[in-house]
Length: 276
Image 1 (cartoon, one colour):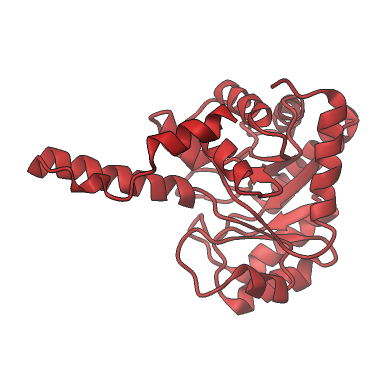
Image 2 (cartoon, helix red, strand yellow):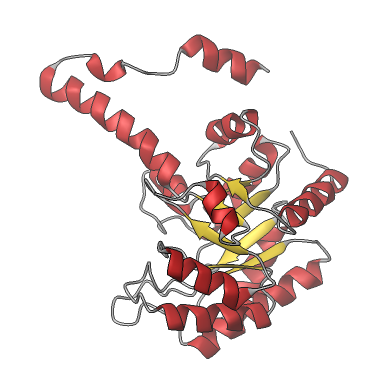
């Protein structure tokens, strides 16, 4: 399906409204089929996953070039009628001008939200200096505003993913990103009640996203009680799928047995789903 400007505007308005109150789950499909299945289950919005998409294309998290990511975003926007939040990594540029250019290209794919990280990928200096990160966030905000499209900007503080688990610095960064124009704030990797409540309080009244990428003692209701607006799962669904595939494939390769197919989704059900 090719979404119209009217339908994209409606998706973006619905996406922004989801962030106004309550708490919603925004799962992360990695391809067209997984997106359509999640839409079938009744979720209200979806988010891409750089890791899941990378693995599906035979590369690592962060290994896809910007043109391939933009094509992936177009496919995901066309896959369902749900709003799509783009995991746009570090903006695929070191300088603010490049981030602005690429964010504008991402907006043109039809997404409803775009996330920008402050990580560098360099072990010696894994996080951007805060003034540089803020400049890039402002550039992303300006690019969205210049497009005239109501696309949400999500600012990410990567401390806990980048090996710098300093909650005070993460909070300082998120506050700066909020002031620079981010609509929603996100510190992937925080996992304790204390850290979550600290981030929610620091970013209020702007909404906060929390990542739950594995088994957790928290429920969605718990997140709502802590003031979290949305919960994403990152590459967890893709990893769960890979886990089932790996177990079945290893049993074939190492033992010549077929027990790994137990619990597999029935082909008839999948065909019926995708015919609909």
